[in-house]
Image (tube, rainbow, N blue to C red; front, top):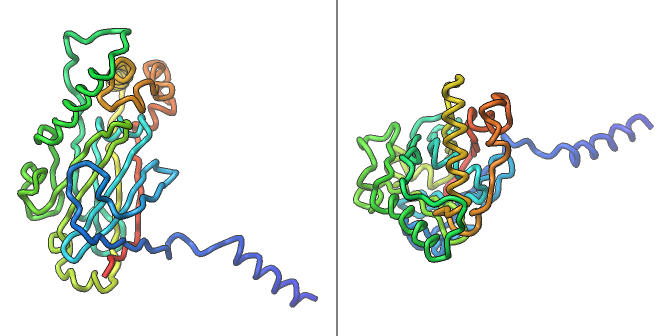
Length: 283
């Protein structure tokens, strides 16, 4: 009887406790045609994976020359966090999820712009004005007004890479649904000393990480609360992001000045991070 009970427990434990996440491997999908880095998702050939903890929709693909990373962000608070505090893709060729090579785009503080003098208050714009705002917002990225930098690569910067003039290319756009689209192309030769070994199945790591406020005091809290409330007002009467999130309001942002330990404040003081510890390229 004792042996029988041990067998039953062993079988149940296999069902209740599946293989640990450490052993999970994400297999990159084949990109049969080169992905055009234009902020449009019509040429994506990879179904996106949703990570509930981080809020990232993401996909990873490759061909013989390049690694491609695609992201879609639907949550308006996470979108504000990326645009205000920055975003970085880290790649670790040693598959230890360390911050070895990084594409920091956009950089922290991109949305810290002076308020427009002629901004209307408490007035919902028509669809044409919203479309115009969306166009102007996206043009900041298309024309290279939004800066980024490379970490650990030989290149000095990525100012020219937005138009494909450099090997590494990245772009953010907001679509008509109000979703943030992030696309990146990185040559395998820029990441790996021997790309052929990775095309044969050698694993590496990818980390997707937002920026965060790395210091806090009363004055910073005042700035944070005012900055994010002003962004929220901007969304309500004419977000460039489109109709999809025009009325979205981040939770508890109006109480940041009084509640330093609020969930909204804590959310901005910590990075939102997704570690993909083992990635294997498609051959």
